[in-house]
Length: 182
Image (cartoon, rainbow, N blue to C red; front, side):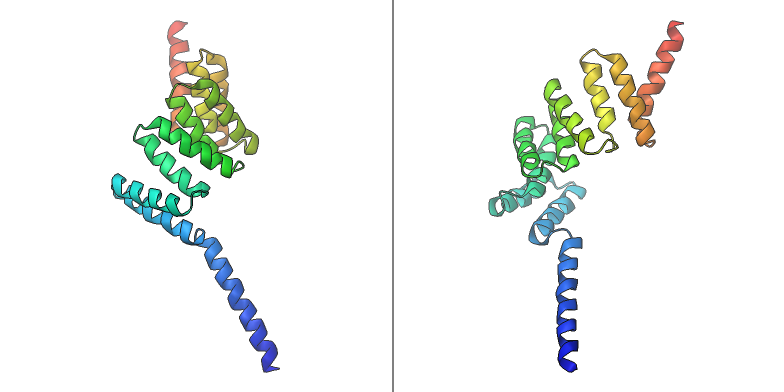
């Protein structure tokens, strides 16, 4: 009987270790990403970049690390580099909406409206309620001179994400403009 308990105990320990790794954010890659994000939250962007770049040196096929660094350099205005990293993340993990959404935002910031529209629609195909995606698609339509489509996306956004103050502002602004014209 003690032998059965030992086997069950060992199996339970293995399962706990696997669960801990899974829920703690992916082992070493998760630890690298958390370390970089800690620097970001402290405003230490150079240090965050160094951590992500070192991580990518070791794990170049990590979608998470490509995404982290891509997002950082996008915020810093390095859109060509951001696009390269975010495209890599989206290629490595094509069903991860946040990677594609960030790539779409990068394209939008860079004036690549057709590319932005494509990526944001892909996010919505994966998850029609992904936060702020309808808002950014509305921004694409607005910049393309398609205000009716833009407004539909802003309304969709507040219907799936009532906390999106940006979408509410667009709706209220359009409502005020329409009232002023009457």
